[in-house]
Amino acid sequence: MAPANLPSIFNATSQDIEMLLAAQAHLGSKNLQVHMEPYLWKTRADGVNVINVGKTWEKIVLAARIIAAVDNPADICVISARPYGQRAVLKFAAHTGAVAIAGRFTPGSFTNYITRSFKEPRLIIVTDPRTDAQAIKEASYVNIPVIALCDTDSPTEYVDVAIPTNNKGRHSIGLVWWMLAREVLRLRGTIYNRETPWDTMVDLYFYRDPEAEAEEKVEEEKLPGVEEEGVAAIESGFPATGDWDAQAPGFTGAQTGTNWDGAGDEWAAAGAAPTGDWAAAGEAAAAAPKESQW
Image 1: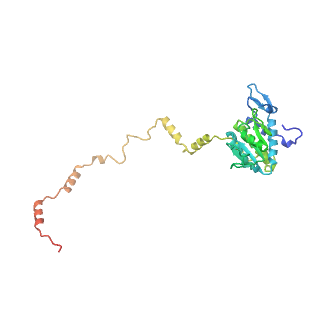
Image 2: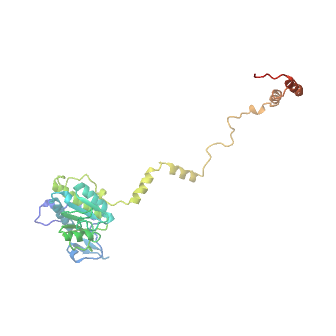
Image 3: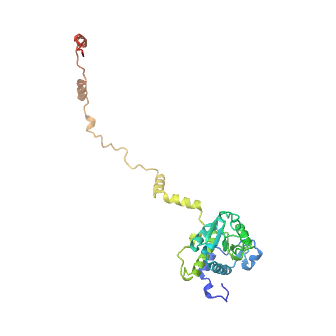
């Protein structure tokens, strides 16, 4: 994989090559740019250009040595306007100390010192030379070296180090950024050697759809078993869980034979009004002398 005059430490392991193939980092587009032809392995019958993964690994190691040579990690700027690479550059910046620009690149960030987003990096790394063309163009004005992930149809103008890979797939983009971060940390001494597994999973560098994450969160918040019980009830036809012909426990047969006639007589006697001469009582009250308050 690596040239014969380089130490064996720069050789890729079988696991690294398997990961590159599993992420389809070797599958380019059907178009071929003339400067990317040296990195081509062959062209398939359907017209898809296949990239030599050995060349991909060589450029990853070369780019990592360039990045590790920068004294201040904050002088490195990683850029990705492509959504598939935004999560990867943010993770790369978090692990290596670089400055990330995920999303739209503000024109003038490298050339117009009046802007609030003005930066003076010593090195920039872009995900796609076509979508990040503005950043590469401004870097050429101020003599900033450029490292780029290039597909077979990517323009290589003003690109100093091209890493040949599939820069359109979310898995291949995340894997290359993950390998680049791992090699940088190994050269800095954070990771002892390549055989020592890195505790950061490559899945953290992969793009995640926000809508899919929201749907998964909603499904997790649902009460477990509620939907299953509803489906089971519909399938069973809502069977009755009790005997509808059974008599209520509060009414027994003995109560149905009670004689209510006697009770009715007592209520009639209690409610009878006393009889008397209401007219005589009114005349006696009128004849009585009224007491004066004086």
